[in-house]
Length: 84
Image: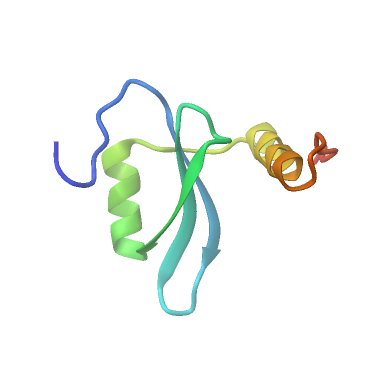
């Protein structure tokens, strides 16, 4: 295993949140549960390498809704109402 590869049988997910004018890709990375993630930033080339080495999946529309509702719940103390 190298420094950029996470050995696990669980699905690994990516959600790109921003691409800066300085060439960084800002993204959320999660393993197993898309609502539990870390915020990361990498240059484009390293981001692509990270995604390939980890066989990541991009979040589905429903998973994005679930993540946003979870954020809302933690911020406001009630379940979110986002549907799309």
